[in-house]
Image 1 (tube, rainbow, N blue to C red):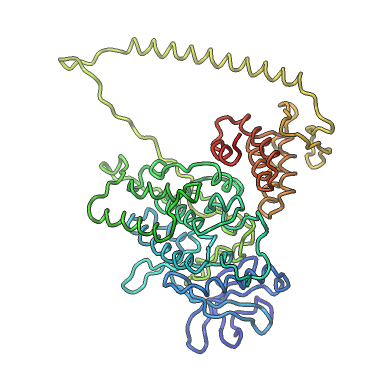
Image 2: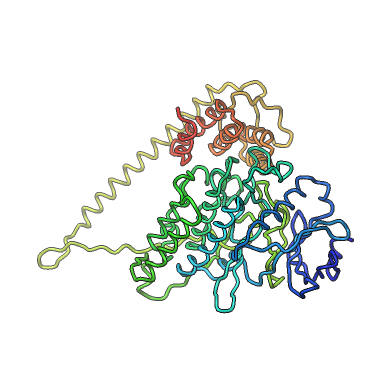
Length: 538
């Protein structure tokens, strides 16, 4: 039976398939009816072509096993697991008629702080149960959090999609290793630093992801912006996120909640809340203080004046990777398994980067700064216009002299570099067709300088993109080769940073130190310096 023919058919003599909800690289997700009880359910059906892939089958089985361990009101319930008549494997789970948190964020932001705490505290309650059962989710994001309105209870949460969950027991029942050493899986925007590095994870990695979600719910933005999966991972590893109140000054974020968010986004797991219960208790304490009237909030300057127009995430451009581009995509797209309205579901291809959703590029307009002018005893303002004119004139002259001097120094330095540069054997040359580039000597490339006249930024950008793609699929060797070729055409500091991280992940410490040294030499104010100093002391 072809998978396109499932609609209207009965699977395993138990489930009548009603409609397609979502589709991904591993299979399809359907709304179905359990025949005996006439109860709506969700069916995930693995593609028959993947049945021979041991790793994929094991991952599919692990999702059922991980979710079946959970018995919590805020976790999705697994009802059944088996094979259809045609041999295809399926998971049956409860149907939730709500919307995912990304849908709510996109259409209803800004959310009151009390609502944010109500939603996130339920997520943490589900995580507490999962962590207690030895299950780490590893892919928490708004798309994997369903919210429904139950009778008498608003914003009831269900956490779902344990497709790449990690079971932390040592029973050995999981079969083959599902991820290679150093292999990164998850969604880059929500990855903890240790997850982006491919290190061993514990439950505190999930808490970091919750911190990212909290940041996003309070500001309508992610902590970091990037155009690529590798860019997100690098920023989680090396940069401190801006304060939510600075990222979105007009949002009403209490100082207590802001401090908790920043604590949860700490690079070291030891500096975050240590358990989901502790995290939840701190959240509820903030909500209790707020309801008791002790809350202080930051308000925008427009809140006391004329009404302002709120720019919502729907009106902004979002950069969001919806299908695990770092290589761990469970293959179910953005996992629309629980959507009641099929029109909301979106089909996402495996590895596709969705640039069409909603957030991230808001830039608030300028604000006037009002001060007090000093006056004389009778109220007249002193005339400082002549002095101000002289000061401005002197400053402009000094700036002009500085710019001219910098230009002359740049020209002289460029000439010296061109005269002193001795190309290594088989050094890259700029040619019209970058696809036909000659062989490149990649030895000790980190210490070489490339004159401006020999650089090819366009070819470097293409090779950098190829390196990112190789890194996402776990091919570190190819990623290193592509990044080096890109560096030889345009030695950008970002490339040296990536090469250092890749060599560090492969335990080639000396080479990592060389590349990170080059990065810091070219970018002395790099935000990655603290991270490099931490993992690579002198």
